[in-house]
Image (cartoon, rainbow, N blue to C red; front, side, top):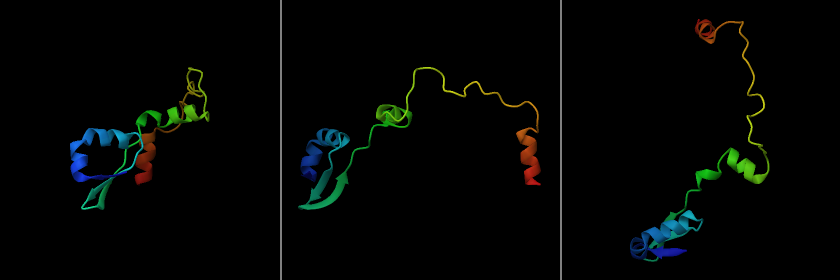
Length: 87
């Protein structure tokens, strides 16, 4: 949709809402496109939520498998390994 700068300024919130819902808004000056307004997708469906919605992942509400893993108590501390690596 092409919109003049004057029209855009007059109805700013309406055009921003339209862009946010996925509509591409092209701003014109003297009938030439000078800018495009593109909405930013909502972050609510990012990451795990997106996988769950797509059916790629499932969750029954419990803790993730592997949450009960324990680290080994023997071996060198990480700080010592870093100092050795630095030389």
